[in-house]
Structures are given as C-alpha cells and as structure tokens.
Image 1 (tube, helix red, strand yellow):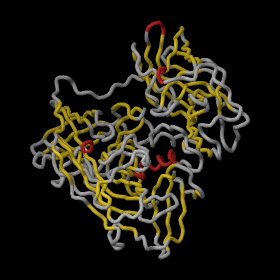
Image 2 (spheres, helix red, strand yellow):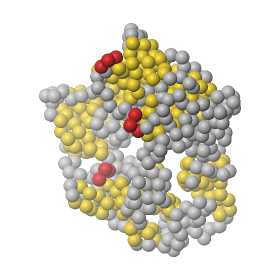
Image 3 (cartoon, rainbow, N blue to C red):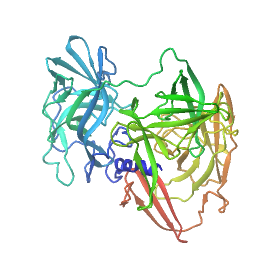
Length: 558
C-alpha cells in the first residue's frame, strides 16, 4: 500500500555511491525531489573540492559566531518557491518550482531577516538584509550554518558557472562570484523576488574553509505571503492528554493521541507519528451505541521538514487492467469518517479502503504519514514489559570490508498488548552473553553506547523502517548474539527476554550458514545499477552461494 503512494519518493534517493560524498549534506525530505526533478550524474567531480581556478571570496570566511538563530520584529510567514540544484551522493538533482515553508521578520531600522532562504536546504537560521522602499539588499557572504566538531560551515553567496568545469554531460559547476550582495524586489502584495539570478549565476551555499560550492543553490527564487493558520483547540474546550493510543498491529508500534471534545466538535492531536503536536478538527454525531466523527480534508496542520502539511484522503482500489493496487485522491469536500464504539471504547476508520494522509503541500500527492488499518484504543497508562525482539538474522560471513550484519525487529508493544512510548524504549546487544559496547570511533558516534534508543539512526546502527533495525559488526569469532528490549517508564525499568542466536549451530533459525561457499558478490546503488568499487554511502550487496541461494543486504561502504 505504501509503495503505490510513495513510489516517487525513490527518485530523490536514487543517488550513486561511486562519487565522493559531500562533506555535510542536509537531510532533505524523502519526498521533495521527484515532482519536477531532473537527475544528472556528476561523474568523478568531487563535491566539496574547489575547482582548479577558484575565485576567493571578497569578504571574511565566516565563523559560528556570525550565524543568526533568532530575530525580533514583525513576522510574516512565506511560501518560498525555487528552481535550482542539489548535489547528493554524486548526483546533480535539478528541481523546478519547489515550494517550501519559511518566513521573514521585519525588524527595526529597516532590517529584515529571512529564514531558510534556500528551498530544500533548511539551515534553521536567518540571513540579514536591509529594506529600502520596494528593495531588499542582502549582503554576501553570510554564514548560515556550522558543523559540530568540524572547522567549517556554509556561507550564503552568489556562485557563477565555471565554464571549464561545467559540461552538458556532467551538469553545471559553480565558483564564488565577486558579488557582495543580492537584491530582492518586494511587490505590492508582499511577494519577494530575487533579482539577477540565472542558470549561470545562482544563489547558494559554499563551504567556509575552501570556498567551494556545497551543492545547494537556486537560479529562481520567490517568496509569497502565507496566511493560513493551523488548527487550534478553543480555550474553552478542555484537552485530555493521552486518553487514546494509536494502535496498529502490523506496524509493531503505536503512540499517544490527545483529544478535545466540544458540543459537536472533536479534535485529535498526534494522529501522525511524525507530527505529534499537530491538531485536526472534525464534527461528531452521537447515537445510542456509537458516534461518527467526520474530519474534513485539506486542513492545514503545520510545518514539517520545511514543508506546509495538509490533510488529504485517498481511496485504494484494485485495477483489473494492470492487476495492481491503485488510488485516487478524494474530492476537496470529502470528509474522512471514524466510528467511536462505546462498548469497545475504540475508534476505527469507517471505510477501510480510505487512507488518511498528512500530505506535503496541498496540490499533488506526497504523503508524509499514511493512516490506515488502525484503532484508537483507550489506555490510561503506558507502563508495561516490552515484547521480545524477533526475526533475528545474522549475516556471518566475512566480506571485503570486515563487516557482519545483524537484522532484527524491536516491537513497541507490552506483553499485555498495550502501546509503549517509543521515546522510553531502547535495546541492548549481547555478544557471547556480554553486553556489547558500541565504540564511538568505530561507529562514528559522539560517545560510547550500550543502550541504543529505539529511534536512534546512524551509518552503522540503522532504522530500516518501522520496527526493523540493522547493525553492523566489525569483529570475528562470535558464538552467540542476542537482543533485549529495555523500557523505562516513570522511573521503573522493565526488560524483555534476551533473544539469542547460536551462531555455532548452522541450522539455527535466522542464521545464515557460514559453511556455504560464496559463488559471487556484487554491489548495487539504490537505483539498481551495479557498482564496481563502492567508495562510500548506502549500497545493496547481493551474494550468490554455491547452492544457488541468494541474499541481499543494505550496507554502508566505508
């Protein structure tokens, strides 16, 4: 079901592991490229390395002290619309008319502060300008972000096309221009448009240390006032926290949902796991045994990942011609309905074929959260003992990188079937019956770790999807490996059993037989293209054994 709605999301992560990795790419939304994106290979160009004839910036390099994180004045929310580039994992992604959320603050002395000025590259900081009549002048360069533990960050600047480094096959390449400012025109309706930009002169980010292009920039940029307000509960209606819990057995986890009830109004907060603070509003009709809660779609619910999020409803159906599931977006006046069963004290969707969507934008379908096949159950407490981890799979052959992989699932339900709070849940790995410490240097962590938070995600400790986890090990001679869930609620700790694999027993469930002989090993990037020598990033490793069996694994090439 998710694939049919989110298939286009794969385009934005169709990124090669063959080219050099950017120093510090942002973490863009997995849904933000493909609507108007064009992907071009960059060949062997090194993102973050200055071309041979780099022009030096005319002003200071920049420092963390220059970054503006707050501003005072009158705020106006904006929709930023830009066309530009992102370089990610060695691919130049060109997008058109991409809209993201931002705002401008009008301060004293005609000063203005623009938040997240480059679409698709949210720094969560401001750049400063000066308004003079219908013009805003932003001086350049300005430092917009700095990376912890590293001696560099990003400067906002103008970058001009480098004719020597750019080509039709490999895309445009940019170096800093001599410009010391960029101008914007303010229209009568409040729309702000950048002047002088083109595909030969972009507004973007350059590294502060070597002044090379970071791979983010726009050649068109406008900002329009945004006036919609999020759903809020009236002050005279009492909010009941954590009365309901979102429960979906297939997910393996749930979360608290708050609610507020007026005479004929009903409000839910936190139906989306990604947006726990967002409220939606519906109307309610009561009967003797049940109530029907009707929720209008196209409600604006807030900002997530730098995007304005709206509610939508989608109907799933079976396409007899193609033999696949398909979907249609319901009309703007459609109301998504839930049934409140008084006797069972549950709230469930009335029509299981309808998916409730928290959508990126209010035009095309770009689902952030998809809600289907769920129940809201009454649950006063979130205490309990966590269920056991399950489906442990250990890949126990040595490869060229000296890496083993453990795959497993960590459900967030109690042994009684209640929802547990995922922020209170963690897990411990046991190797040969001893707690395993993840070394900060080996695993690229800020400190050594024994308990891994349920939602923790890094290069070698990976949240695959939902409750699925993957961990890499760089140690030989393991006899047993186990996983245990740990839950802390109101100062009380409970633990699951330790689920253990005996790796000396080659017939053990979840154990990939080390005695098999490997016939071939191939690596692929996430687009499915074979990679001869993976140099970095996420790759798919496909192993064929001498008995004809095949295994495929995600891994981070180092």
